[in-house]
Length: 106
Image 1: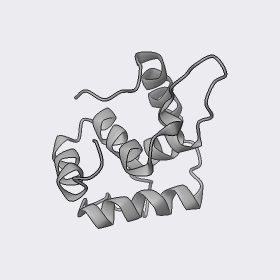
Image 2: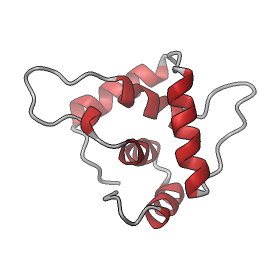
Image 3: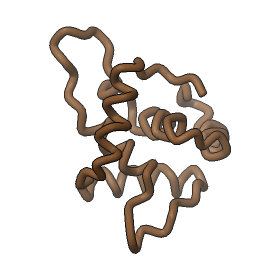
Image 4: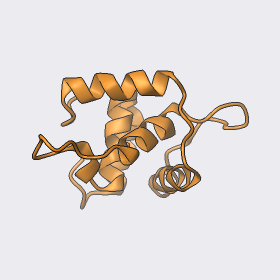
């Protein structure tokens, strides 16, 4: 589905998400707000966290390595959420996000 995250980081993010890390409440809140504003429904969170939020949280928490010039941690929150949608393969939500935020390159 495109995107700008390199293959190494992409695989690392997915591997970390598979282990279901604890996501900070502030990051959950940020992702929920992005989804709500865009009109993207999230999965029922009573039993587990929506995987799109987990991926967003991992990417937002990442630190930029010293040996790179560009890194996904430099993206705005909406763009990172778009990358999480791409990683999941959620084309419908990606289209909704892009149409609701035309001023952000997604």
